[in-house]
Image 1: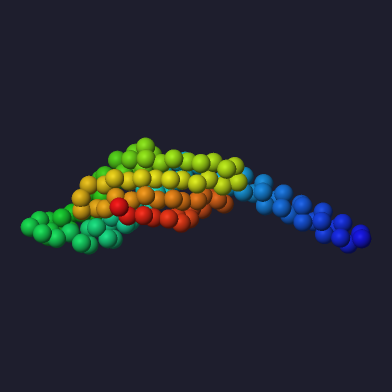
Image 2 (image 1 turned 45 degrees about the vertical axis):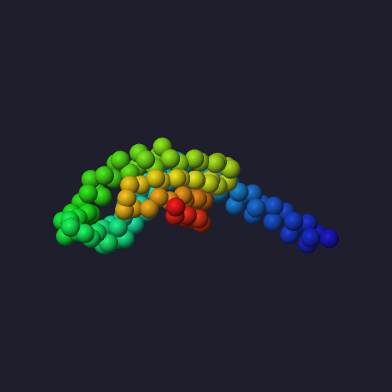
Length: 126
């Protein structure tokens, strides 16, 4: 009986410690905006810039990464304005809808933030 009590107490302390750690490391809105901006600019540089084609394809592909870097502050503002945060104290869920100009498709992202990390678990293109 004493061993069962000891296991119960130890389990309670361990769960309490994990919960406290989650509360302290729940990332905020600014952290998410930085994460999402970095992820989107990386995507644009790797996917969109490499697919630049047409009459101005050579010009666009040469300067596309510079355009993305120049537009980074605007991208972060768009993400900030189009994100809804649901804070559950232990973790947060971020929902972002991005309506981007052609040729970039529009997306809806759902990301969970916990332990100062972000995990995008849904990305729908429309």
